[in-house]
Length: 424
Image (cartoon, rainbow, N blue to C red; front, side, top):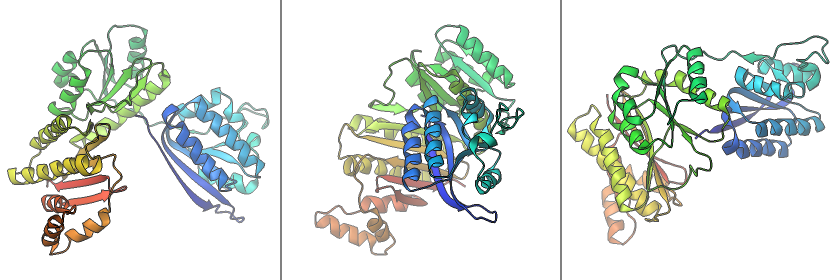
């Protein structure tokens, strides 16, 4: 489930010339699932006439060869317009990957935005500013990459595969390089039985291992380690995005054949993230189900299991469940109209102070602004009752959710509802 977030903003250099440029901030992975988004973002900026593009790569964790090709192509577009495309704050892994393919001789790699602005004002070409092989500058120069944050020394990783082999040996060496603890086993029951001993921050599991769906449910909901990250390795040809009646999502996945370096980056990222998240959150979970009664009931039961773990009184727990149930049923009935091909996605985030549920359907949405304005009216219940008597959709469910939570809001087209309850 690797993702890419792209944000752009127009800026001017701080030097005397005050030249305009576009800063593009990237966060995530530039790979097969996200390449089209990456390319279309650059295409939109090029179509809008941007001459100078500064791509901030500080939060890019991986880039494949197709993404690198796009950078080379749009560097040419910028050059034709008398501008430049340049990369700043590139992480070490990403920078070295691009250097191996020779991109550092074509596109400027600069330390930060200040250097990029200076290059824009001076009008220096790409080859002059990044002659790492000494071809232009006369002497070799180091790639100005960022030093990656070291993984937490206390990180613990478990690899679950059918048989031991070269892959497990490489993973063990990689985890050891991070001063992490490595454990290898061949079934999920062993992982669950030794959670207290191993205290894993990360589990990498082959999808061919029997009982993996049940394993995700027990680990993410019933165990004392619900924040443990899970990366699933799917066999070649797997349709990971296919609709299932019910699914608890892993934190990330890869489909064979995959770039081993990408797995390393994912693993290292999770080994850094999870220990930090344990200090901030008590539960993070994403699950989805189709809009049929049996799957809905399973979703509601799972939500109730999560609520039973909250340190709140029975009254507040009952109120929060009522709001959650109303949100799910509204998503199925009014959003998806009980279409068995449409899904409901629930994201749960719990920290010591609040419990938050996002419930998303695949419907067309509705005029949520109007109904949210109505719930603040003292006559809200009477108005809703009157609409129901007239045979219209009355908004009584929204009023119920509002009364049962501390925060209620709709986003998107009105097909995403956020319900929140304070815990402390």
